[in-house]
Length: 107
Image 1 (cartoon, rainbow, N blue to C red):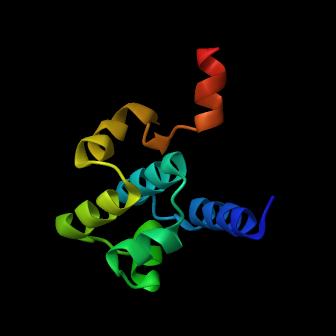
Image 2: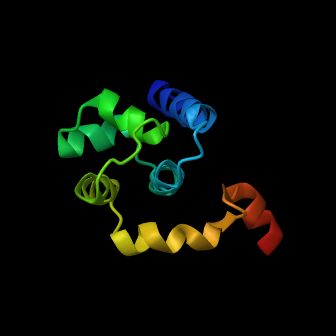
Image 3: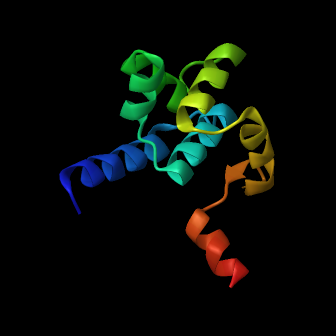
């Protein structure tokens, strides 16, 4: 594993651990970033968003990030708002589905 991949892996773990407020917005954005393989640092670079602002959103600390901000983040990830809203299928009782567990259950 290269240095960048290791850093990205640490970022995903930190995001999952730190989203203690149970923010559905944060959960959806994190899932989209993981699926597309786009780290938070790349999202910030693509839309010129302050790194701390994105981390607050992804940690669930920003109560209302605003629809325009969410749209910009989703576009920077390489997804559409339809992708974002369709993630409701990946949630069971308000919890994001584990991608590996979902794949295993399909086999």
